[in-house]
Length: 73
Length: 257
Image 1 (cartoon, rainbow over the protein chains, first blue to last red):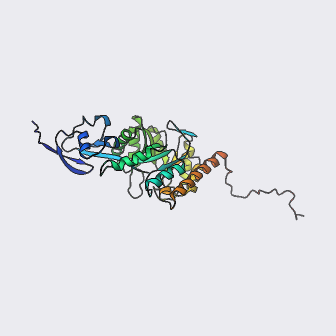
Image 2 (cartoon, chains in turn orange, purple):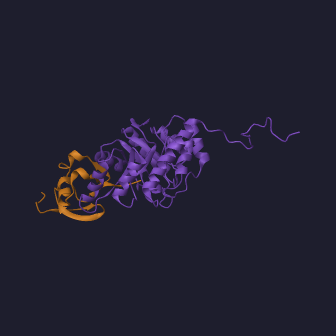
């Protein structure tokens, strides 16, 4: 049984983060004040499709990449 | 006008969006170069969304096609995931595929490149593979499903132009119907003109414009260089000869006995 206070440890853009269990990608973006329309997300090197952010729950040990448009050659 | 990857373009100059002194200079260079295609990247968002959103809003207001890249990826998996993320964010199936094998030369890893290209082509991406001038790698990329090739001129940002014209010419002649874009290493408009004179379909450059003393003027110069090279190619230049062929007739020369 998972308690409401349970925390998980994930990595976001290479940095360790401790977040509540059952956090969705949407919630994570909101926590970092990142607008979904300007980012792309991958978990454990698998792209998370934009329309599934609210449904995709993070798990302990997940490595999350949140990328944004950037100048490039 | 010409067609590539399902789109009709006016310009044969593709421009990178990095290393400009300011966003306004970038915008001016895009306009002055008259490019239709601008490359972009994906990077970690370290602050709020404002950084990426400002850049994205700036580009969206310009009449250009976006060509996302997988710059910085060292494995096929990294490149494939980045391509997926780019398609999700930029709503395009175009991808400039880079799988880097060496951090000093930024030379492509041909094995990872072909592996990633095969995956992405099967998924419906239009892959613009950044490759070397190696004929065998080119053949493998085409077998993997690529419809376009982007051989390097010389290492990224080196400004050296076409380091191996012989190999590039061989590549061009071997695959006359494959769209080929010279990508990387160009430094001067004459380099772009040389590539176009050889029959390449377009050139992609970034540092040559962004890092010039006057980027806007250099963008104009490259636009002219590409145009001159293409018109030279279409005009049919005279072949090179070892000996001389006089321009002025030898008949009725004066002072002859």
